[in-house]
Each structure stands twice: as C-alpha cells, then as structure tokens.
Image (cartoon, rainbow, N blue to C red; front, side, top):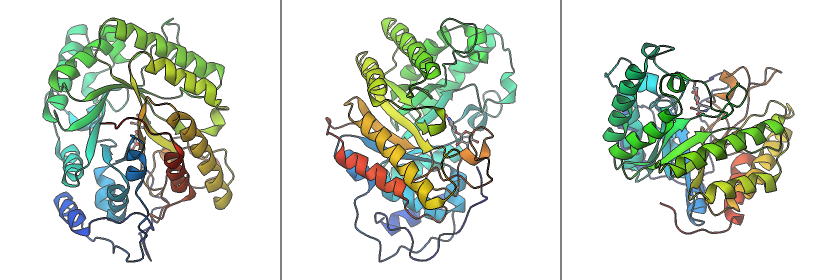
Amino acid sequence: MTRANMREAEGPGPRGPVLDRRLLCRALAGLGAEALPRVSKAASREPSLAALAAAKGVVFGMALTREQVQEAPALARVALAEAAMLVPGNELKWGAVEPAPGRFDFVDADALVDLARSHRMQSRGHALVWHEALPAWIGTSPTRAEMSGALSRHIGALCGRYAGRMHSWDVVNEVIEPSGERSDGLRRTPFLGALGEDYIARAFSLAAEADPDAILTLNDYDLERDTEWQARRRAAMLDLLNRLIRRGVPVRALGIQGHLDPAKGPLDPEIFRSFIRAVASLGLSVFITELDITDRLLPGDIAARDQAAAETTRDYLTAVLAEPSVRMVVTWGVSDAYSWVDGNRRTRRTDGLASRPHLYDGAFRPKPLRAAVADAFRSAPARPIAR
Ligand code: XIL
C-alpha cells in the first residue's frame, strides 16, 4: 500500500451513486472508523456499477482492506455505493489469518464480511492457498505430513467459518509458472514440494467439504495477452483445468486477475476470447477477480494517462464481457490513494509519479476509468442472472 498520494476527501465529494448514510454510519461504527465524510447533496443519481453490471447478469465487486476503511471512510463510502460484493484484500491471506499453527485471527476479515452483510452485499474469499503471504511457521520445505495437516486445518477453518456467507473462494492462487523445467508448467511452491500436484485437488475437495455452496475458483494472472509467454501460461492452465475436471475435482470457476499492463504486450481480443471459450467448454464460469491498471508505460500527463487507461480497460472489458461465461468483475482496490502497484518494484512507475490504477482518484473522485467500466457494462450483452 502506498500513501504517498493519500489525501482527504474534500469539497463536493465524488459524483458517484448515492449511499444510505445511516447504513454506512452503523457499519463504520462497527469498524471503529471515525469521521464520516459529508454525503454531497449534489451527488448525481447515476446508477452504480453494481446496478449496470447486474442488468447484464454480472456481479460487480471491489477489494478493500480494513485498514483502508478505517483510515479513509470516503473509500468505504465509494465501495459501498458502487459494488455488490466486497473482497478482503489481505485479511484472509494465510499469514494474516493463521499467525501461529492452529491459532486463527478473524477480527479483520470478520469486520469486512460484516460490513458487506450489513449492506446486503456479497463477500468473496481471497485466497486459501498462495505461495505468497505465507506465515513463517510453514517453513520452506515442510514434510508431506506437516503440509497435509496444515492444509486441512487451514481450509477447514476458513471455509467452515464463512460457510454460506462467501459467494466464492479463490482456493488456489497463481499456480502456473512455466519458466521452470517442469513440463506441466506448475509453479514450484512449498505445497507442490510437499504434496505434488495433488495439493490442488486436495485444496478444492477440502473447501467443498467445508462450504459446499461457495463457487470454488482457481485464480491466476497473465492469461490474456498475445505473447508467446502468455500463450504458454494459457496452455498450461487449460491442461491443468482439464486434468482437474477429468478427476472430478470441484473447481467451478477460473479467476483471471486482470491486472492490466499494456507494457506486457498486445491484446488480441479473439485469442483471449477463444481461451475463455475453452475454459467455459469445461463447464466453468470465468471471473475477472483483480482488475486494475499498471500505468508504468503510459504518459506522465494525468489527462492523457487517464484517457489511455480508460481506453485499455474499456477494450479489455468489452472483449471479456462478450463471453457469456464471464459472470463477475472485481476491481483490486477502490482509489488511487491506496494501491499495491506503487508498493511493487515491478509495477511502479520509473519516473517517480504515483500510479493511477483505480476507478477513483486519490481524493475519491470518479475518473475516466470509472466511466469506461460503466460503458463496458452498458454495452455488454445480457446473460442469465448470476448468483
Ligand atoms: C496484494 C495486496 O493488494 C497488497 O496490499 C499486498 O501488499 C500484496 O498483495 N495478486 C494477488 C493479490 O492475488 O493478493 C495481490 O494483492 C496482488 C497481486
């Protein structure tokens, strides 16, 4: 998270959709958040992104963290007004939620799940098994028995606690990494080392046992562009999904993160859409789970940069929403005041300017990116109502 460009919301406030102020007051009180920003009377009655998406059978959500909600009530206000689903950005990651073996701390995750519930919004869980954000106690090379025990306890506890309350879970995150010498393109992780490829099937079975209703998702990045590298990633992902489905593993959706980075190569909508169709032909839904834009190669000038980011995002969403299997779009953040993009050496700009990856700017005002997402929902074909 970067706070370099963090500013308090001032002035008229975002011209976004209107929010029930009483509900927000109640929810923020539960989170210990203090001053509530004024809700502008001038706020337009423009439909929320959630409403525009729902009209086409798509769920629209936003990821946020408890810390952001506490520090910036204006950010919570935007998310609650725009989204139909909240995703805890870090609070359900293994290291955050199980700091010692078998000792779980659900305080922060509960606060966000309760916030969603008190606004009749859905929640989604991110992420049960990921090679990053692991607690130190897992170690780098746990034995088969240690890893097996840890996996059952962890997934049983998280999926059990939120059973019936999660729309979906990212069960395994970022599993493909075809640069190694493995022919299956699977990423080497402590899970793979201890349990072999079977860790993936086990994780899905454990999650299904503890929460039969959540849509269990395999989530990954760099699956869309027309480059040799991403073609290899797509092929490895399709092979894996085929193996899992053949074995009856309860994977129900592919999550495509959607961290858009024009620097990574061109996007051919037909190539991307045919990948999505191949995934759908296995009976899976497709979710865009972490939409934002890495603007490191876009111009420094803010108006030009925002325009280019909006166009890139509109083209991307227009392509994916043309596929009826795409049933969810979640943005990985709310406002440029907080973004993982500036916190990461590989994604931040080299000119020292703050990144502008999100739909709302650092003062919580809607950007051209927000309008682009709205346009893409407006022009998308309808699909049967999503859960
Ligand atoms: C990021 C969070 O947004 C940051 O706050 C944290 O420091 C690192 O992780 N892919 C994922 C997310 O699946 O979990 C990552 O989230 C961003 C990339």
